[in-house]
Structure formats: C-alpha cells, structure tokens
Length: 218
Length: 218
DNA sequence: GTTACCAAAATTGGCGCCAATCTTTACATG
DNA sequence: CATGTAAAGATTGGCGCCAATTTTGGTAAC
Image (cartoon, rainbow over all chains, first blue to last red; front, side):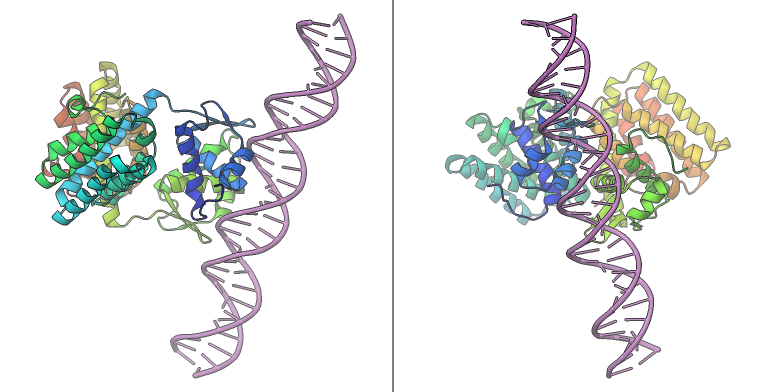
C-alpha cells in the first residue's frame, strides 16, 4: 500500500495529505510530523516539506516555527466561502460550455451521467466517486476557456470532497445523479438559466429553489 | 541594499519576485536562475527554491525539470482567457461587495478614486499605478468572501498589468479614472447591473456597451 | 561554409549532516 | 509532595556537497 506509482510526486503528496485531512485521518490540531509523513506516504523528506508548505498556502495547515506544522481544519465559514467560489466558477464555466458545446459532446456527457447513475446500484463508493469525477472532468474540458476550466478543477479539490461528507444518504447520491442528468438536458435545450440553477444547486447540495440568491455565503 | 529586514523571509521572497515580474524587471519567458535570484534578493538558496515553487503555484512562473523556472508567458489567446476569468471573478466579488458595503466604506473608496484621478495631472506613472492598486485592493477587501477576494487579487497579478500595456493614451487613463468613480456611484446607488457592467468594462478596457456578452473570450 | 559530434562548463535538484529550538524526563530542593 | 531546574531526547529547518542533466563552446569532418 505504501508504494504507490512514482509519477509526479511533486503535487501528489500535498494532495494525498489534503485528502486525508478532509477524511479525518489527521484530526484537527494534530501535529504533522515530517518523519511520520514520509514513512506513511512513502515520500522523501524534501517532498514532505514541499507538501507541508503547500498545505499552509491552502490553509489546511499552519506553521509554527521550530515546532512544526499542525492540521488547521477549515472552519465552517471558510468551507462556505470555498463553496461560494465554486458556484461562481462553475456557473461561469457552464455558461461557456453551453455556448460552444455540440451534439456529440452532449451525448458523451449523457453517457457519463448514465454511467454514474448505473453505479448507484452496482458500484462501490470508489467507483461512484470516480464516475462522478469523470463526469465533472468532461464537463470542465468542454469549457473553451482553459484557464477557467483549470480553476474549476483546482477548486473542486479544495473543499471537502462530496463523496466523504455530503453523500450521506442514498437519496442524496441519487439526487446528484438526477442533477447530472438535468445538466445534460439543460445543455441540450440550451437553457442557460436552468443550467446555472442546477449547477449551483449541485455544488450547494441544496434544492434548486433554495439557492437563487447567490450571496448567502460570507 | 541586499540586507533588508529579517522578518518573515518565508513569504517575502516570493512576493518580491512577483512584484518584479509584474513591474517588468523579469521579462516574460526569461529564465529565473537561482544564483541570480539569491544574489539579487539577498536570499539563501532554499528561500529562493521555496519562492520559485510558490510562484509556480500562483502560475507566475513555469517549471521545466532540470532546466529551471521561467517567467510565465501567456500567449494572446491565453491572455484573453485570463481577462475573461478576471471578469467572472471581479463581477462576482463586486456583487458581494454591494450587498455588504456601508456608507463609510463607500466614502473611503471615493477618496481613493479621487486620489487616483488627481494623480492623472500631477503624478508619475508609478504613483498612478500605486493609487490604482490601492483602489482595487480596497475594493477587494470589502468583499466578505475572503477566498474570492484573494483569488481576485491573485488574478490581477496575472496577465499584463494595465499600467504597462493598456494605459497607452491619456484618454485611456482618464477613462479608467471615470470608471472608478462610476463604480463608487453604482455602489452608493446599490445599482448591481450598472456596477457589473462598469467592472467588466474596466477589465476589458472597452466601452460599457460592448461587453454585455460575457462570452467573447475563448 | 555548414553540420555533426564530443568535451567542458554551468545549472538544477536531491540527500545527508548538523545546529537551533522545543519538549520531556530526571533530579534536587523546599 | 509539589515545584523549580537542568540535562537528555526529539524535531525542525538550514546549509553544503554532489550527482544528473542540459547547454555551451570547440573541433573535426564533409
């Protein structure tokens, strides 16, 4: 387990630790000792240091000189703000997707949305997670503004992943699957306001009606 | 010169280099050689490396393994995309500013806008640049979503700075000053659509009429 | 004159070592 | 038994060294 693939450690270590922080493996306030991290993640000392430095920039850890790094679990306020930013970015991206997408790409997306829906019955959580990721990645790729698309994907990795925190009930996952389908339908119908509404609701994990005011998060 | 204050080198070196990149000291595409940087900024090798790593995360530099770091050099198409992202971010931020700003803050902004306008006659380009920066920094600070505000400021540093590339004529700078004032007026009048229009026009450096379609940039 | 190739120089980037600092333990003192 | 103090241990974090790689400069061959 401790010897994953060797490619691109440069980003990976920070992402792995970030994932584990959000999954609760490292409890908040706990010290992130460099020795533990290098043994646990199979990384070298320098990679660990770089990762810790990046976690500070992401506000997932804080640094106390000569003491070390400790987990700084994002407070509720902060995660709300990140979610708010995601709504801004993804609705803007969706708007640009809608303007340029063609029928082939829409069918492609529909296939991915259906694949996710199918896995609700038969798949493991990991498979569902990956199918969900595939759908959103494809959606981002359809955004003609690559810069915006990259930013969307970057911020998807920030807030706690939905698979761990928000897919609490089967009903909630099924709701996500329905929202995927509705995005595809809105794209096919070129219905911009509907698309933006469902994208925002999907991120906020709220009913589409509740999220009309794009301002609640402070 | 090479012995600045010793506090908090951890962030400072990256910020110093970032500032110089935006000021044009390091031309785009140029190699950021570690030895040059440590002599020029009076920093150690490790500080330079950390700074370079952070500049990559901020997308102000690119890393090529075993070659080094070079100043990020977006092509024209990419620059358009970054500008498009800035419109998305700053209009969203402006919307959130409008919802929470009070009369005192508006007067504060008006003072900064007037200070910029005054410098059009009397000030140097550098003073104008800094007054412009002060106005936009204050505007960002008024955004209750800190994450969004930080992202706005980060993206202001990407793309070429307006002072060097877009303030080509006196008329254009005066237009910028007028737009600052109009933002203040729109805030005071709680006129959201007007505010968004002028913010978008300000970024695109186009007349407010031309930019209604938020989609032109690919 | 141009191209191919090889050697030398320069640069990056990783690793180990060690000093500085903080924490813990042991001990002495009241 | 509590408390203050000093030594020992553990951890971080910086510095120098060196291998890997690329670029440069020079030389020979065509």
